Length: 383
Image (cartoon, rainbow, N blue to C red; front, side):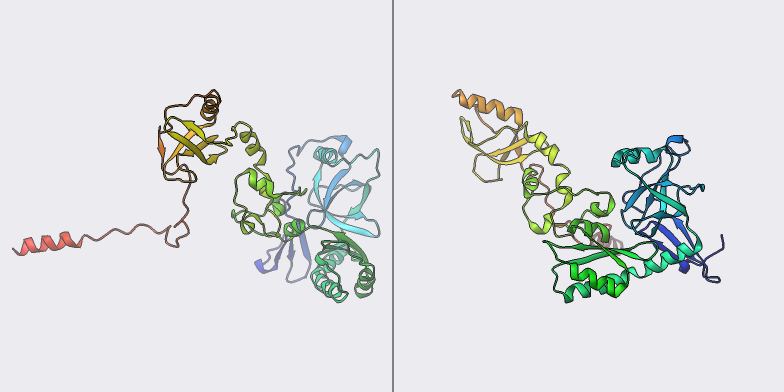
């Protein structure tokens, strides 16, 4: 490989490859960049041969669009090769991401059975002419998306064009759009075909899928889950926040897509399991020295906090779930324990975050100068 300058290297993260252009000849060297896709699969069976899946390959296209193809060309194909594959109309160009027995596991996972359905074919390895047409089609995507939004706005359609994906031969494009309700885009398809001179396919996506396509960082500092690994978006309700005893603040519970955060569902099962072991306290606990009111519950720690003053956190006492259950049984029998005052919990594991956002919290502490001692020493020396 020739020595290229850093300015000639382009990273196409939408398709998981690097495009290196030779500044002298203008030729492009495109190579597969492993790990640049949220559907990336690690080949744990690399180096193992199995005749049953020797002709099956996983081919990746833009974003998360993948497919299983059968090699009908007779050429030797390996992971990382650019191949021309069969499409509904014309042909497409993609990158081989998996080969060998691991493809069989992916087929089983996705419910692909070659005996029941006919797989599309891999025609051949991509030639320089195919790659050039592919790159020319990719270069049209951004401009086409902007123009498509203008055409949709002129027709007064309540929809948003989120992304455009051109087919490898440049004769067809998939327009991904977002809409709350049903949209009649029959006239829009005619305008697209007349404006761009291509075949048009419309595919609706949700707000979470759009956020996954755009990407970004969440409040946790990590990459968005929808852009990292989530492919199936389950419904999220405010009951998940209530189960975890979270504050129903829309600004904190909503993600960058404007919907409830996907991570609200991550720990719901653990909280429900812990709540099943925590007794309900509809009435205050009866003690010889008064009534104790429930003021706070630590669900995961299975600890309940009580106070003699209703709604007050001045003097709080902690009891485990088993202890509360025993006291409730005593109260039902008409018995009362002596007192709740066992151990006062001043701050029952509640963290006060005031001051954590100070801009100088990471600065090292400055040592105070001991000027007074130096002055006293100087006075003694003069005396």
